[in-house]
Each structure stands twice: as C-alpha cells, then as structure tokens.
Amino acid sequence: MTSDSADSAPPLAIPSPPGRKPRRKPVGLIDIGSNSVRLVVYDGLTRSPAALFNEKAVCALGAGMGASGRLNPDGVILALDAIGRFVALARAMDVARLDVLATAAVREASDGPDFVREVEARNDIQVQVLSGEQEAKRAALGVLCSVPEADGMVADLGGGSLELVTVAGGRFGKFVSRPLGVLRLDEAADGKRERCLAEIDRHLGDLDWLGEGKGRSLYAVGGAWRSLARVCIDQMQYPLHVLDNYTLRRAEAHQLLEIISRLGRKSLEQIPGVSRKRLPTLWLAAALLERLLELIEPERLVFSVYGMREGQFYRQLKPEVRRQDPLLAASAEMSLAAGRFPEQADELMTWMDPLFPDEAHAARRLRLAACLLGDSFWTEHPDYRALQAFLRILRLPFMGLDHRDRARLALTVHSRYRGDLSHPLVNQALALLDDGDVARARVIGLALRLGHALSAGAPGLLPRTALAMDAQTLTLSLEPKHPAFLTSAFSGRFEALAKALDRQPKIA
Image (tube, rainbow, N blue to C red; front, side, top):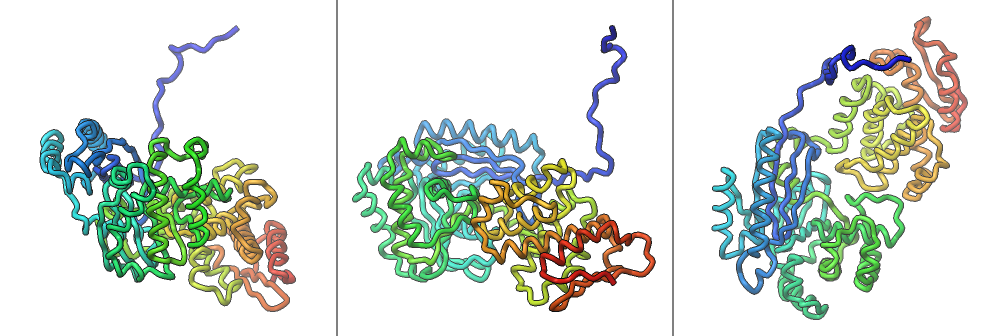
C-alpha cells in the first residue's frame, strides 16, 4: 500500500503563462446617485467598456427630500460607508483614474455641500457634482457609446431626476433635467395614480419640443426601467433574456405597461431578476414611461443598459478610439485573447467576398465580426463547442448589437462549428430570425469552416486559393502542387458550402 507524501510533493505555485500581456491599467467610477451608490471598474480605456468589477449599495440618499430639502440622514451614513469601501477597493485594484460623480440628490439638497466635504475629507478624493445639463449629456453619450447611430430621444430615470435629451448623427441636442426620479415621484404620489400623473404632467407639460422624437426611438436608461424590461421579457415569454437593446413597438409597449400596472406584488416577485427593493416604485416607473410614450410618440421603445457612467467613460477616450465600431472592437479584443490566429480574419473576409456580391454595409459588418470570432472557441470540448459559442455570443455584453443581429452572429459561429439547429436553446432563439437570416448565417459559417480546413487557421495560405461563383457553380481554385491543399482534407466541407448555396461544387 502506498500513500502520497507531503514531504516529497513539489511546492504549489501558480505557473506564469508564457507570453502573457501585462494587464491594462483599469479606470474606476463611483456614481453617487439619489437611490444607490455604485462602483464600476473598467478594464482600461478601450472602445467597448468591460467591467472588471461592479457593485451597488442602495442608500436612498434622496428619500424624503421633497419635504425636507435635505439628504436622508440614514442614507448619508450608508453612503459614507459604501464610498469608503469603494475607494479602498479601487485603490487596491491600482486604478489609473477614479472619477467620483454625484447627481440630483447631492446637487439639490441644502446639505449636499456638507456631504461632499465629508466624503472628500474622509477619502482624500474629489467629488464632481454634476449639473442637470451635465447629467443629461453624459446619459446621451452613454447611449451613443453603445449605439453611435442612435436617433431619437434618451430618457434617463434615476432616483432623484429624469433627464431627457435628443440624439442624432452621433451628437446630442436639446436636453432637460426634471425632478421626476422614482423617489421624488413616490413621495409626491403617496400611492395614488392620479397624483403621480399630475406630478408628471406638471413637470413635462411645458416641453413642446418632445414632439421632435415622434416616429423615432425612445431610449430608456436607468435601473427602474431595466426592471420594467425584465417584466416585459417575462410577460412576452421572449426568447432572449438580454436587456440591452430590447426593443418594443410603441403600441406593444403601451399594452405591456398597462398589464404591468395591474400586476400584484406577489406576481412581480415571481419574475426572475426583479429586485424586491424596486417593487414598491415599479408602478411609478411604468406610469412615467407610459406618459412619455404618449407625449413623444416614438416608433419604438429601446431599453439601454448604458447611461451616465458609460458616458463619463466615453468622454475619456481618444477621438480615434471613439470612432471605432464598438462591435468590431470587442470582437477583435476577444479574437486576440482567445483565437489561435486572429490576423486571419481579414484574409477570411476577402476570400469569401465573391459569395456576397451585393452585400449591404450592416451585413458586411456582422460577417467581419463572425470572421473575428469564428476561431475563439477552439478550447471548448468538441461535443459542446457549437452550443457554447452560440450561447456566449448570444449573451455577451456586446455594444452596438440589436437582438436580431445577436442571434444572426451567434448562429453564424454555431454553424462554423457544425452545430445542431434542433437543440432547444438554439431553436428558441431562431424565433428572432427569418429564413433568409438562417440561410445566410449557415453559408458564412460553412465558409469559415472550409477556410479553416484549407489553412488550419495559419495566415498566408488562404490567399493561395480563391472562391468564384456563378449561377450554377461554386468553384474553389487552388495553387497548383501546393502540399497543404490535399483535397481529401476539405472536399466534404466544400461540398457542404456548395449545397448551402444551391450550386454545383468544382475544384480547379
């Protein structure tokens, strides 16, 4: 009988991976809001902000301010403790920069300056108290960071205020900040719907420019409206539980908000992801959003998880980084981190161009993202690779993707790994797509699969081959006598691609 000897075992140590790049310097932001205080630490100043750490403390600084004009004393104690923790965590993470921003409650409370002085003295930091204008513009920038082509109106709902700002052409226009946060509304309404609506109309009735959002998009930002989105997703049995860019037509949104306003607390408590602390004010958030839909008359309601904090992050980026496409920047980052030969993406794009002669810009953008991501899941177990790729892409926090594009991109990479369309999780998401979407995703996926079989992912080999397509035939031309191009290694994948295109395969 033998036993392991602790004396003979080598000392435990974490190996250092060879060639690992040094981590970027993170940047941090503490958001002192009217309802909560939050720390977000981002993984460096890249085009798509990735949160290394995100923690919230519900302090309700603005509770009771309508009557007292002062910060909630209990909330002040909670906030000071939370901020102390957050500053210590950020410093331990060695952030390159820590922004500390305060919004409506601190801005408007008579004892707000005293609170700021106390925070600064305790933590040796500087607090920037945002004006209503600054808060509105940062909320708009947060949406533009995610959706550069956003067109319509951004509505950012916090605990103490509501910010409204128009956006178009990558810029923001008219804006306003009104004391219609959920804590303020709760205090003014006193549980009565009529008083809630009267308070809303009192602050919004004079904004004659709200009609500029008619027929465009209304972007709903803020935690209360994110909770509403979760309820809508549950009520619709929607196939994708991703809040960002969840979109409803105006009439559909009206109908859902009316249903939500009638749901009892017990029904709401059963919905996954809805915070119990949000439940008492959820009806107020629904009433406010319903009234905005009536005043603005947008074509669609779009829920955004990006707002003031991401707007502050976006302001720090260099102009050339701001101009990058957020989806392609994130895809390139993922390819560099997980792919074997990330430099091959451009070769794959050019090589399969003949298959898509009349391709629109938006479709080409998604195809390039698929080329970047197509080799990022090679470390997964072969039996689960396709499904893992599908689910990760479907749920990753990519910016600049609506839900239909998410499903298209996920299905493309799923096809690249020869995935099974009959799997229940895949089949559920297919409800977002039409037959043309599925066919295109399959063709791109099969082309990626063939490209990797031809080259093993190594750069420099694909340009020695060429694809050509006419009405009847798909032709693959190979450099003569090149030893890498052994037909038996890829003929099956080439035939599968030709079949998907309804062409006869021909190897030249």
